Length: 180
Image (cartoon, rainbow, N blue to C red; front, side, top):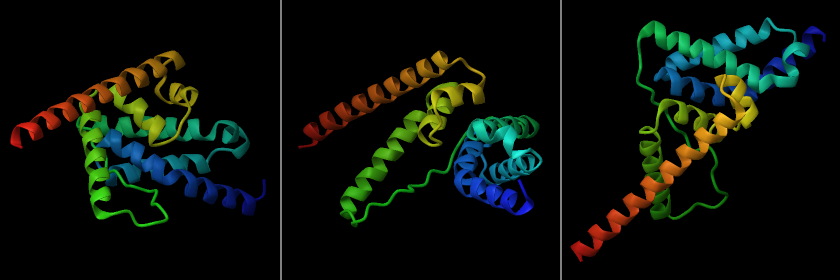
């Protein structure tokens, strides 16, 4: 691969993975600036790799390097809280009603608050699956868990989120009935 095509490949990988890796690193480090540093390190390490060595498992390689670096940073700085800045990326073609937008944001906030109550291993695999779009196998390689364990953690975590959402919905409905 010549220098020009290698540079173009790096640019395309950066365009595709920078944001998902930053969100993932932020969920581990708890800080967006540290996450950006971790992602920068990840891409510097990618630049030192031969494309042919990582191309077949690129997402897995990137997320593994990113995770390892983020965990190192978190350990070094003794920051155990894990928070993340969430962005709504997809925007519908038509502007929804403001009340619908507010309702969706509240529901997302509710889900994220519940997600933060889950054990950290469930949070991590759910974020890798739904925020980063990784397959169970890729998550398995990143987290060094078995594929079946990844599936179990995702299933258990989502079941807990659903149960808590339903419980909150029922208690909100009961409260509204009492107010009326």
